[in-house]
Image: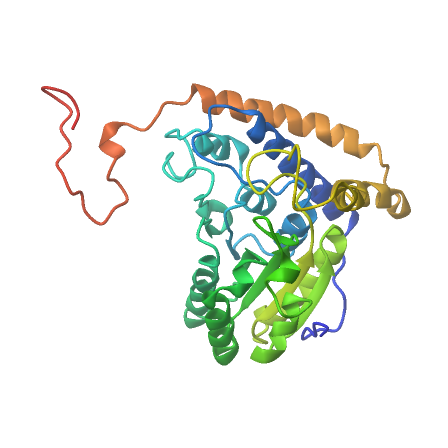
Length: 340
C-alpha cells in the first residue's frame, strides 16, 4: 500500500539537508563505534551501526517540536533528532551531566530538548507511549506529530496491535516506524511473522502502510515526510517499514563468528552501507563526495570532546538517589556515619 498524503507532492531533501543527513549518519556511526570500544560503560549496549539511514531519514522528516519514542538501540535516535553529544556521552557513563543525570544509561535515554520522550529496553513498550503523546497533542489542539521506532520483534507484541487500533479509531497524528533489520535478537524475521512485510498489517487497521529501502536515507525521508504531512493535516496514523540491517551483533560490537547469518548475507548488506549510498549520490546533486572525509574528521573531534567531557564529569551525589521518584522510601543522611 502506498502512502497518500493530503498533498500529492513528494517532499525531497534539498542539498543542505543532504549534507546534514550525511553528517548525522556519520555522527551516529562514529559515536557507536566509540561506544563498543569503551570499557567504562555500565551494562550492555545495543548499536544501530548499519541502520543509520532509517534513523536519520525518519528524524529529519520531523519538526524540532515533534515527538520521538525509541527502543533499546537508543543512541542513534536522539542523535538523529539533533541531541548534543556531551550530555549523551555523560549519560552512558552514569554521570550527573547526562541527559537523565546518569540514571538512564544506554537503554533508557530521554532527551526532552529534542522531543525524545524516552528509550526503553522492553520490546514494544514504546508504541503506546507514542500513541499517548499523539493523543495529548490532538487534545491540546497542537499540530505536533509523534513517531515511534520499533523493531520487527516489537511488531509481534500486543502493544503494537492495541496502539495501531486506537490510533486508527481516533485518527491520531502518529507515525509507526518499524526498523526491520531481519532479526529479533538471533531469530530470523521469516520465522516469527506470517506475512512478508510488517507494513501489510496496516490494512487491518485502515491506515496507509509502506515499505521503504532502509539503506537509502532519501527514500526514508520522502516516505516519512508524506506520513508526517498526512498526520499533521488530520489524516491519522501511518505504518512505515524500513528494510535495514545491523552490522554489529545483537548487543556489543562486531560478531566474530555469527552462527545465525552467513558471511555472504552480511557482505551483501555491507555493500549497501547507508553512508556510502548517500555519499556516492552527492555528485549527481552537484555536491562533492569529498565532503564525507571532512565530516568524518569534524565529527570525530566532536565525539572525542564529548567523551573527554563525560570522563571528567562527576557522578551523581547520593542525594540524587531518589530524585525523580514519586516519593523517597528512606531519609537520606549525608552526615555522621556516612550516607545511607
